[in-house]
Length: 140
Image (cartoon, rainbow, N blue to C red; front, top):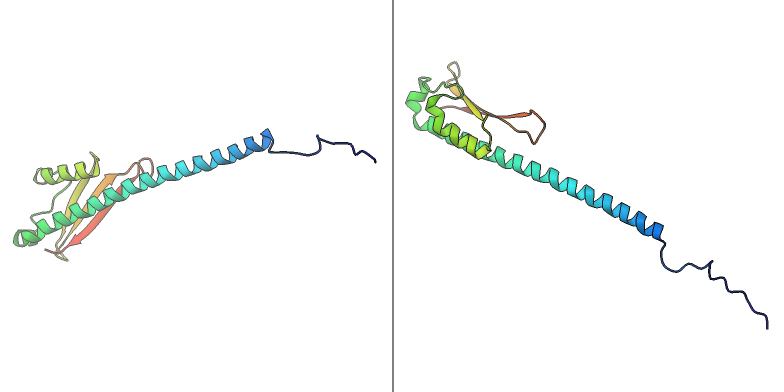
């Protein structure tokens, strides 16, 4: 009977340390990617929430104009940003949008007998120094 030599070194059992390190690196990069997506998602959700709040507040202001239609049709609500007449409403907007630079302008357009309400605020989550605005045309 002939004996075969046993080659223990040629047969591999299990994984090498290098394979484990590469797998950990790939897993770490994947987890960092998921964390980055989660951060971007939270930023966009907050920005969307603020836009929804702005729409609700603009609708509230439009309904106020419609409630006093006679005075509104005379153009009495042509108001610039930071007017004392809008101090309470501007305070609500700045609180809801969490932004001290939020401002509304009410522009009366006599030729079409409509108001153009424009709410503008700074949204740093979109891009540094980026401004957002929302306009609404109201016929009293």
